[in-house]
Image 1 (cartoon, rainbow, N blue to C red):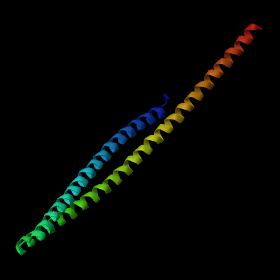
Image 2: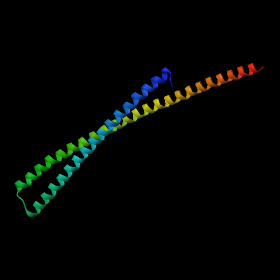
Image 3: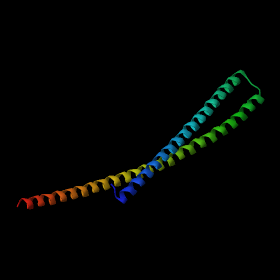
Image 4: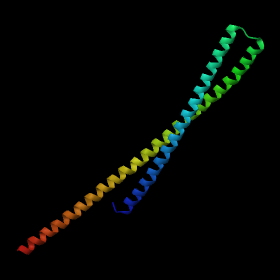
Length: 148
């Protein structure tokens, strides 16, 4: 593939390869953000469960109304943090979907260039084979003429 179009295709394929690499890195980062956000969300849920268990233990022993009110206020703040973190998880998951789509598009683009390059290479081989065959035919014709 030494033609200008072949060189252009090769250059486009190299650019597409870099795009795939960048898209892969972006997808990996987005997936890492989801994992970290989910871990934080799970931690908050565990934290809430621990405080709920603590509240239940204190209620069974008896506790003042003020202490109970403090627990309730704390739970409101904690629930607000949990809700906010869940929104972070959902947003991060949406970003993964976006980056996965971009990655798939870049993969398809690269594959398209690979197919075009392959077709171009096959055409070049056929042209070369025809040229070789023509030369061999001419050589055979000359040899036949010289023998006469």
